[in-house]
Image (cartoon, rainbow, N blue to C red):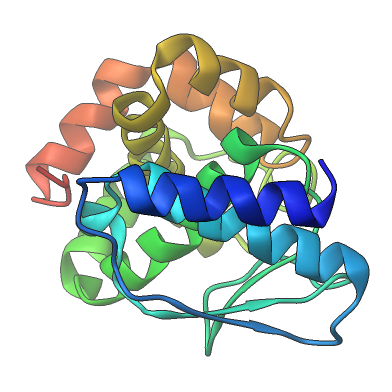
Length: 194
């Protein structure tokens, strides 16, 4: 969608939205066309969904060649410039790392339990995360992401987003295969978002 049409859609959605919109500052790392397009799509995503439950930091940077990351500033790349659902899921995922950081002790206990449950979890992309600790931590973060996505866009669209990820493949497959077990760990350590 051309930028002027996307801006008009964002404005229309904002005016029609009765949902409280969290105030998010979105900066561009380089100001490229793709970064601007991603920013416009993210603004549209933010006004189209009630993200108040999933907003833990209010500053976002769009950086074309970056890997998505949460700290020190939530940073999104431009991979999902043309996919609202994919961008929403990535945004929520990175926000959830801020949520989990505030619950470090509970997260560490959950990770210890997950290490016992899955002693041979892979490390490294595309199956796992960059370290063993991060792979186990992502079992929690990605589980919470999937729950949020289902609430926001429904189960069918969430399944399509997960299939399109291309990274953390073992993590997402494990969550889908063992969802009740992962849910019990998350609940047992009081990490759910209600």
